[in-house]
Amino acid sequence: MGKVKGESLQTKQVVCNLPEEKVFIRLVQLPRMKKEEIAKAIPWGTEAHIPLKLDEVYLDWQMIKPLKKGLDHLDILVAATPRSLVDSYFRVLKKSGLEPVALEPESVAVVRSLIPADSPKPTILIDLGISGSNFVISSASAIRFTARSATSGQLFNQAITQELKVDEKQANQLKIKVGFDKTKQAGKVYQALEPIIDDLAKQIKDYMGFYHSHASHIHGPYKTVNQGLLCGGDSLLINLPAYLSKKLDLPIQIGNPCWPGKFG
Image 1 (spheres, rainbow, N blue to C red):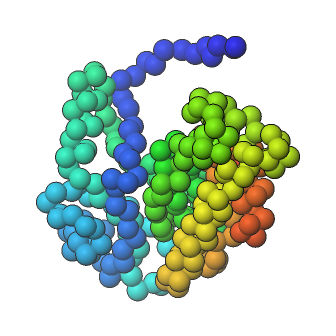
Image 2: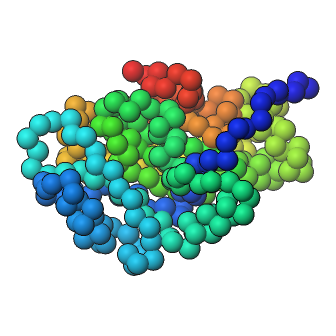
């Protein structure tokens, strides 16, 4: 097995991700106002959109650059997360001798990595992890929707374990080697995973439907999601992009941070 060689880090400064399920991201609209007035108006415009009291959270915001001139409002992307969570991360980083520069939601980092900042096209990102999945819809240069699901690599492993009567280590190996290929292992791994993948496709379809029903105020040239990107360790499941593309009638591929926005 090859070894990765690298250089030691020369900085103690870090940017740390916050778990998506602990962060509330909302796009709020405010009347047009001076930039210095926005910070005072954010709490008023956000309070109804988060399930926590404002004195229990840290708030941050970003003004979304409009794609049209002459709008009668401002679009503001707001993120809120419990103070207790941020403070605990901050304490651990400081005790480790590190200097936290910023803490940000996973979805923000993923979108920045895989989608060009100036891309107006609505894109759904499906981040398949070992313990759960994050769904993010980005459109007109901003995050418009986020959601969290229990669909996970662990769920894939459990299904293979039950169907093939193997232990979890073997199940994980089969998942990697066979994936979602119907022609291998007599199709048994495929049979184990198919209900979960079909449910994943339904979730994607439902989230896109929700976005489409609320997209009338988005001032970009596109109103419907027309592309999808997979990321996360379990997105590498063999044949998954092709199956989802066919199931959803939507072009879906693996996201590549080296070539962001390959769809154009």
